[in-house]
Length: 130
Image (tube, rainbow, N blue to C red; front, side, top):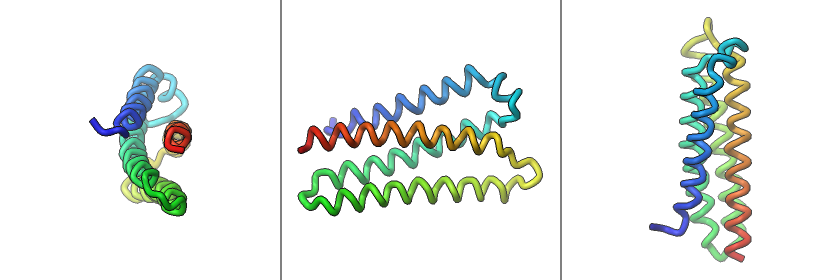
């Protein structure tokens, strides 16, 4: 296996934990007005975006030029932010009458969870690489 596979396994663990959270707290989330299918889709979408971002950053970490790594971090953040913004816009355009703001807010909390995990993994990788 490649050296970077534990990072992706960590993201997979975050994905499974968030899926389990949605499943176990679905009755409470429904009481607050969240749409459970939207949360499952948002979690899968954030997992895919985070894997893409982590892949770009991991490849840039091996480059000797530090500017490449900084550009990869910025590019990964841009990919995730634009992807989330476009996802919310797409969701609104598909279902303007039933657009669920609570689900979008909960999905942004999931975004923060993925962001925290990704930053922790990259900091650890950067320390090991240095």
